[in-house]
Image 1: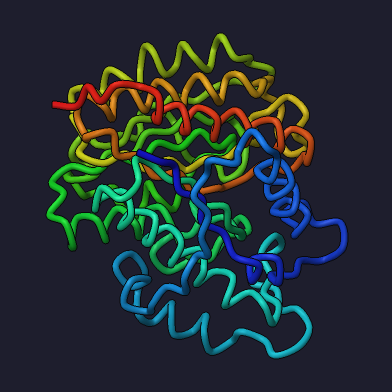
Image 2 (image 1 turned 90 degrees about the vertical axis):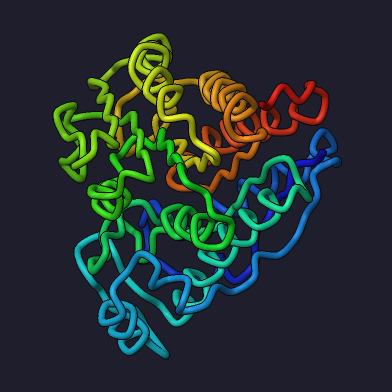
Length: 317
């Protein structure tokens, strides 16, 4: 069994203003580290463009139509203080959707054990009808709904360790008992959601907020004591990861103190759970991570852990 890597050069063409943290160099940094010889066994492919039908699994038709209509043919347009569109944005976001869904298809069909989707812009702040926080469409949420629709998955889990809470994913699945959303994140911090008491209509939302300057020990404790027990009880048939690496101690947008090995650790923990409940099926999609060195180190640890599935026995039931 192998690990699939999907990405696309069109994701470099989503332009942001000078000095913006969500910049094309992020994806170049990921490509650089995953181009090293230690990752030669990755199976590599191009993220296909997603369809509007896929996007409307999670977003309103009116919102999708309006976003498509206002996509500029030149220059930048600003949707809010953080989020802008350039001529390359539309294809980039559609490659993100298509990459997440194609990776899910590859894992659900058994062709690959797991997958990492290296795309930008990120997606987990995009709500049903609102772009925000650099995000337009929620790639991971769309992939979860696609897996349910196409493969009959009864219980899907989205696990988000980005330093910013995934308000979009939470909003999309708030009343959906078939999807569990779990998040560690710094609080208080943008977008201001993610309190421990936010639990969804079916106790299907699990928030484990961390405080400024918390380190890997606090992060691991949040998973061991809060998230992993709830996931185990939920027994997901597919685990999707919103893989943001901006909780790294070098990141400029937050003040947690995780190191690359913490991301490797949590990846292995989620893989172990997936082996028990989901036939090992894990799909990871890039979210944040804005210091290039921290991003390279963290992605390397994450993908190394995913590739470790190739040498582990399959203990799924």
